[in-house]
Structure formats: C-alpha cells, structure tokens
Length: 255
Image (cartoon, rainbow, N blue to C red; front, side, top):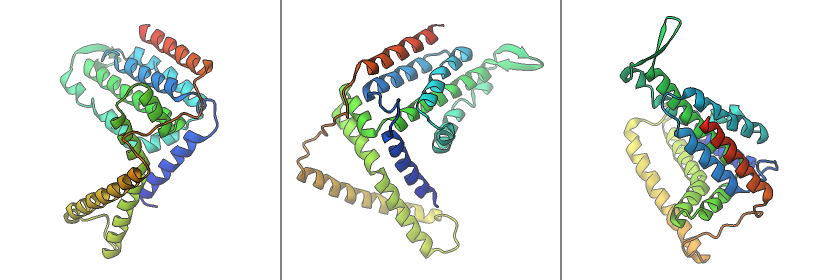
C-alpha cells in the first residue's frame, strides 16, 4: 500500500474514532476546544528554562489519553512528521546559548540544552493535545465550536471544506502517481524533471474540481455559510469538565 493510501486510510479511521461512543467523545465540543486552547496557551507560556514546570502539564495528556482510550502508538505513527519538525526547531539552541546551568556528573548542562528540550516538549504537548481533540471530536463539531467562539465564518468554511475534500485531493494525487508509474516501470518515485508538470496538472484538476463543488453548493442554496449544529446541547457535566480542567491547569501553571 502506498503512503497516499495509508494517509487516506488514517483519515477515515480518525473520523471513525471521533464518532465512536465514549466518555470523552460525548463531551460537548465547545468545552473540549476551550480546554485544549487553554492547555496550549498555558504550555507555551512557560519560560525557556522552566522544564520541570512544563513537564507537570503532561498530567493533562496522560488523563486525556487514558480516559479517551487514545493510542499513543497511533499518535506517533500519524504525527511523526510534525513531531519530528517540532523536535528539530530548537536544535540550534545549544550552540548559541552556552550559559552553564549545572553539572550532571562531568557533563556541563547549558541553558541552550535546557531551552532546546523545553521547546521540544512544548511542541510535543501542543501537537498531542490537538491530536486528542481531533480523534475525539468530528471536524463538523470542531467547526461548530469555532463559530460559537465567533471565529470568522470564512475561516471555518475553508477549514471544513479542506478537511472534507482532502481525501479527494489525495486520491487524485494517487491516481496521477499510479499513471506515471505505469509509464515508467521500474523507476523509484517520480523523476524530478516531471515534478513541475505533475504539480501543474494537479493544480488544474483541483481548480476544476473546486469549481464543480462550488457550483453544486450554489445549486443547493449555499449563501456563504454552513449552518452547523451539534448533536447535543452542553449540559452541566460539560461545563464542569471545562471548569475543573481550567482550575487544574491554572494551578499547575502557578506552581
């Protein structure tokens, strides 16, 4: 199976996971989104040397993954590229910040080392929290929560349409790649000389498909906004979930 097919399969599985029955899946999307945003904001607010305080925020992720029955193995598999990128962001810090913080045996631990690890964990925590939200909440519910937060409807519409039709884009890419490989048997990957042509063809096909989708939407009465609805109204338990986590995260940040 190609990487594109794997990506399509993972997207379908994530949709199925978001729609399955579960305690965390049953929480109203607005409190879940707010808690996720609060967690990310508090996480990135830690100082570059405050590694010990930052690691305490991992309590939220541990509880979330256990209660939501979220697989860490699947997280690493699906988000490995993003996680690798966030881990490499601060890789240059040890070369620029050589301030000695403490000695670990004979090893001199500098401020650059600590800040690099701190930055790495900030990225990992933010990506993990976002992933947990995605696998426990459908994209329609996330967009519904965003509109409740008065996020511009254009942004929400673009987000929903991109997520909804990314599979069609991937399938079109796979179709073009398969057609190329049939014309170049034995060749590993697409030759760099054909990259420009394939990207151009993919752009033209995407524009043509987008126009068809837009025409279909207009024929069905689209007037610039999708009227999203949640499956259930927020109850006392949903607000309690938000208040408890907000208090816990704020307490951890203040420690």
